[in-house]
Image (cartoon, rainbow, N blue to C red):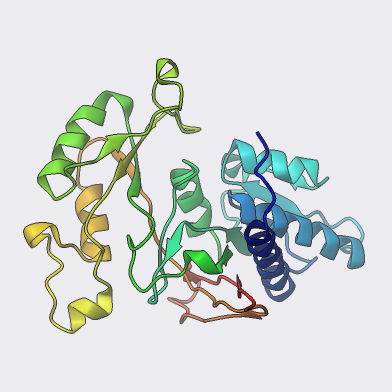
Length: 284
């Protein structure tokens, strides 16, 4: 059923679209060969912006722009826009993506983020880590001081055969309410990813940031209190876990225009383990 249109929804959609067009304006160029396209409602506007850019600024003769989807849904968005998709495993072995555009479920003030609400986290991380730059686009609701402030849980992609043992481990390390994500109709069973894996949603206490740890706070998991990096590493140690929905990004702001925060580039030739989110601000 279509979502009912309200002034709030209109404002949110306008913020998403404005953020997406700003991000594409600053980070996409018609000369790029390979570009990653993530998932989520905001990325639909990102693809719209890319299509508009290419119509105004056509690539050079015989140059092809290829777009690498992070899942089945993003492939359909690419195709519906008339752009050329290419599967991740069809890329030339030495090819790097110039940029990857993606969304986020929540982002903290140090540019860490939760992803995986759409169950595409493994492919999203594959594409992000093969990109020179990761550009995260989101609306103003997604920005919080710490992760797990409003977004309720961390998505974890797991092998079906191991889901029960992974749930047990998660309860031991501080997520007693971790649950297998299922379809709304129970008889259809667990939701499966494009890899035919399951998703577990694991609530934890609000996560400490790296700066909190530098300031002396204990994020080692004592009493269920984790910092972002320690928790990501601990969950990845659990047998049967394919990927954890904790990413590093660079983000933007909130208020009617579009503003941007920038993170430092990580290392020459490696992932700009940062992403930028042009965040649409809410007008008062």
